[in-house]
Length: 183
Image (cartoon, rainbow, N blue to C red; front, side):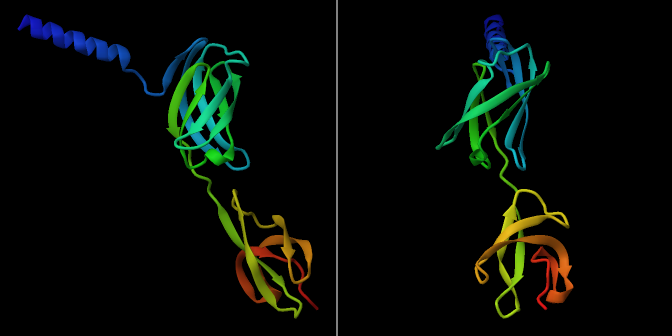
């Protein structure tokens, strides 16, 4: 009985030694814990680590591997004494990845890109309003935002403004409109 108890205690001790926080990794210069992964519009995937210790520029270089796919450089900076943030190509969005920096490896999922799509209206050569397609973007549009949109009927690229409606067009609903009505 004592022997069995001793074996069980030894196995549990060994498991406790090797098991720890899944996202914490000892590095040559300290310890890093993956705190969050988010997709920041206009920037792409951002990984935030809580750290202890100081890291050299060489230690902050890293790589990211997409499961079953591409490899990308990982760009990390030590923001302050307790935080490192890393960015990577937008192509890693929506994927399971492994990333390495400072000699440690982490596994996580990267959130997908949120897209906001809006109709684009302009008038054609007969002065009739027409939906010329959709403009998709990473951020929600705000009233007054402008985009450049090519109207193939006019053969020109012009500013279109995001509005709740354009009364002279007889169309209502959030969309990008050419901001002037034909006479």
